[in-house]
Amino acid sequence: AQKITQTQPGMFVQEKEAVTLDCTYDTSDQSYGLFWYKQPSSGEMIFLIYQGSYDEQNATEGRYSLNFQKARKSANLVISASQLGDSAMYFCAMRDLITDSWGKLQFGAGTQVVVTP
Amino acid sequence: DVKVTQSSRYLVKRTGEKVFLECVQDMDHENMFWYRQDPGLGLRLIYFSYDVKMKEKGDIPEGYSVSREKKERFSLILESASTNQTSMYLCASSLLGADLNLAKNIQYFGAGTRLSVL
Image (cartoon, rainbow over the protein chains, first blue to last red):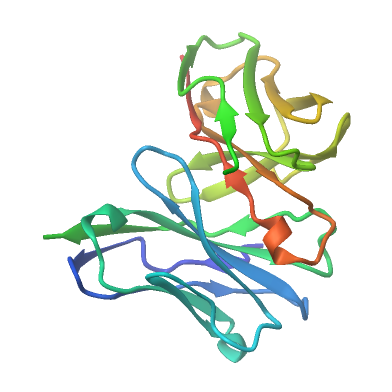
C-alpha cells in the first residue's frame, strides 16, 4: 500500500520566491520519521532535512523547513528564496520506528521543481 | 563527508547477460540498500543488508540477488538481465538501521547507475 503521497508531479517557481512541496503519509505507527531528499538532473540523491513525529518544533536547515502537521499527516517542505540551483526532483520519505527494525525508508513518487529567472 | 561510490554511471547490457552493480561506502556504515528508480514510481527497495553476509529482501527482489562479503561493499546482481530491468539503480548506506535516532537512519546515496538492457 502506498504510504507516501506527493500530489504535485511538477511545479514552476520564480527565483527568490518561496515554494511549498506537499507530502502526506499514512502510518499506524505512533513514532516515525520523515525525510526529504533532492535529486538534481545529475542523479545523486541529496539529503535535505528530517523530522521525528515526536519533535515539538518544525525542523529547519538553512533555506529548508519542514511544515509538519501531525493531525493531517502531512510533512510539507518549504524552500525559501528559491535559487536556480534548486531545480531538481524532490522526494519525501518515511521510516516507521515501531514496525520497521531495519531503518528502511518508503519514498513518494517525487515532485519536479523548475526555478525560473 | 560520507561517500558512496557506484562503479558505473551508465551500463548497456544484452538480454540474458549476468550483470554486476557495485557499491562502496567509506564511512563504516552498517546498513546498505539497493533501489531502483522509475518515473512516476519513486524509489523502490530491492534488497538491503544490515551486516556482512546478511541480507533482507525489499519490496521488489524478484530477478535480483545481492552480495555483501565486506562491510564497505554491497553488490547487486542480475542473474539474467531482462528488458524490464532497464532502470536507474541507486545504492545507499546508513550508519545504523536498528536505532531510533533518526540522524543515524539518514541514507546517503551514490550517483546512480543507468542500466539499459537491450
